[in-house]
Image 1 (cartoon, rainbow, N blue to C red):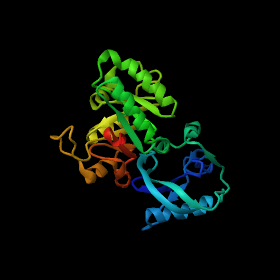
Image 2 (cartoon, helix red, strand yellow):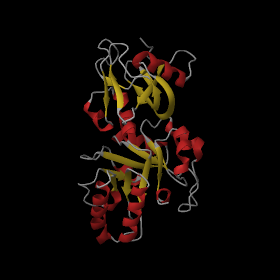
Image 3 (spheres, one colour):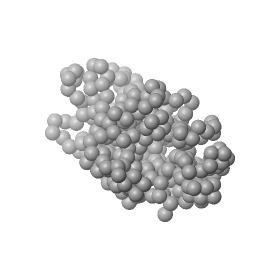
Image 4 (cartoon, rainbow, N blue to C red):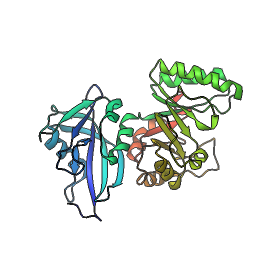
Amino acid sequence: MAHRNSVVHVAVGVVRDAAGRILIAQRAQHAHQGGLWEFPGGKLEPGEPVLQALARELREEVGIRVAAAEPLIKIHHDYGDRRVLLDVWNVNSFSGEARPCEGQAMQWVNAGQLSDFAFPAANLPIIAAARLPAYYAILEGPDAESIMTNCQRIIDNGVKLLQFRAKALAANDKQNVLEQVLQQCRQHAVEVLVNADLDLDISQAQGLHLSSRALLRLDRRPAGMRWVAASCHNAAELQHALAIGADFAVLAPVMPTASHPDTPPLGWQRFSELLESANLPVFALGGLGRQDLSLAQTAGAQGIAGISAFLV
């Protein structure tokens, strides 16, 4: 048994097949958190690099050889009897056919089905990260026509998640334009979160996006939402987002921006440091474009959020 004060470092793989399905396996009944489902992986040996451990564990557990992997999220969790650090990687390229090498139950499931299975508590942010895309667009515009044009550009650029913010829009137009955006996005399987400051009927939307002010006014997650997201600028706001049960956060500004020229940017080093203890998926925002995705993910981000980044 692990010593109570030690941290068990675990390499975890979110393994996807060519159809985008994700591999999950059931823990042995006698194991810690036995009988629950998990993403395959295992403990690092002393001095073993994370990627080497991931490749070894996936080969031993499910018989595949990792060809390429990218960082997804790090999760620190205290179960009471032990503490773990889950070092989670996306595995989209591998050879061999997955099989239960240790006799465990195993399934390929769609990302949307993950919530149907019982996972250890530490895995819940991994499920959110596995379901989220790499891009999160913020939909703005001075009028209805501009917003609808921008919405179509976002869709054309392959974005599958957007926030309806539209703060410049006349108040009496916002509900009608939101309904048009929702209809347009439904046709392309794009999920829409509505900014909480707009005070609109969001019953047909997929989620709610909290400004940092709205976030700090809450002590629990808003009910009835598939997604709850929060805008954050520092460690305290990230921890509050986690405490109320937000699914993901947006952390800004990473780089200097024209819209907030007097706000000091975090920079990639500070951004990465803040994510070390965030324990939920975080999008990078501020002075970034789609070309910065690899840099953001290396720093620990889920992906890139932006306004103009998805309009070209």
